[in-house]
Length: 471
Image (tube, rainbow, N blue to C red; front, side, top):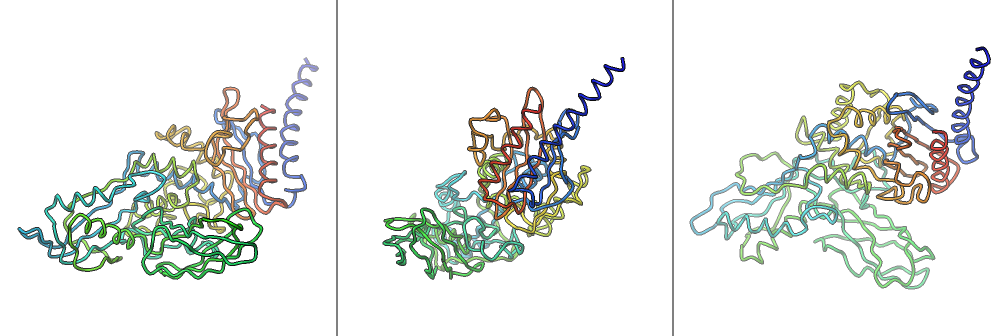
């Protein structure tokens, strides 16, 4: 009997040592021994902690922040929610078809208007049809893009100056258009020369580009835009490859609502509808208007799939401000933060370990603990009525999205559903591992490792594979 007890004690103690060794092996290697790490892995069925290291420490998250944003939006609005953009008029239409007033595009925070990702590319044809069906042949006024739905401060104050003006950190306006992105197309020559700008797509009236780009031996796009919100002056710096007939670099559209109004006016003119005044944009709450048409976005489920699978910053930030607009219009960053924290506090999560500044994770001021992520993932898997929808929105290891090359050709290929995160000196993964009829919930966040992002990723893959062996 004593022998049996000693054997069991040795067996349990041995498992604990092996588990501890997995964590120690990960964090004590030369790349990570000085890094800031927050780690937690739990068994979904038993809620037992399997591996942990400083799980309550809040550290920078990068794009794993999108898990919090998308989960909150899904719970608050439901998967079938659609954002609305309305065409409104503020005057009378005469018997001759003359609108004595203005035609407004009233934004509703839809990130998909003209998007190359999802939604209707040719939506403007339907808008033109709606105006003509309303009996309007001429507008004695102008087309006005109304951006009031979101705050006028379109750039998150916690983003870095280096990011502003680039496509991955665009302004978050009440009206989005064309993913708020344009392409600056260069023609390059030999190394050491300045490239020639040959096209801006789409053309943006009044846009001024100050070109400081150099042609170097680089093989990739290392060019960056700088520019303030609403300003038509953009400076572009950095390096691009030599001898390219067409090399595109992407920047953010300074005023997407205005560009949409300009394109809409052009379409109406082509249809025979005359507009007397040039297009404009405004950011005031003007409610004395009559709607003639409502455009609906794709479902929230579709938007969340795009957000998580491809790590779409624009969509994440629009969802973030949509959460802010849930309680007060215009939607603001501050309201979004309050609403998210309040929601998860009501569900019993450790919101004192959540420091959220944006929806995408782009800000280096964001900080979240592994414990908070695991709590949220537990809730979404076990308690949410949207459990399957959320789970399916996450990339799959070796198969899809930002996890397409993670753990491919390994025993965990296709068995990890997770969101990745990566900015300068930050690498993170949060999600689920499916193993032998078990589901493990995990969060692994690493800041300030002594190595490249690729090297850190390899060590994280080794950790996941050791967990799989242990189970």
